[in-house]
Image (cartoon, rainbow, N blue to C red; front, side, top):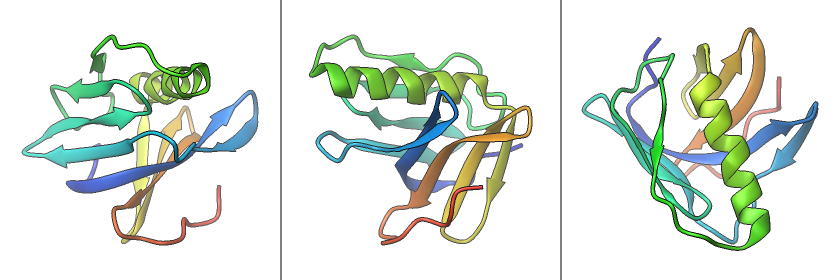
Length: 117
């Protein structure tokens, strides 16, 4: 399954069964262009060689930052690496692991996210 091209913003992720809103204190975006991924989940830059699920390992730079952003980044990148499905609409997208939504994104410029599934 292909992740739709465009600029996306991470909105929320699943952590121990609870949805957590993405902190707005660091960059949290994903760009899909020409079948490749790039972006950030808080501190480090993300790179992916393909935009098709399963993504395989997503590469990251290795900078340090505030612990809460590092924790968020760890969860988001883990979900990216484990994703098995993509469900997308006009303004939003969920990445799923074995049928369970774990990561929510919205197209850049979208104000509100769709309700969590």
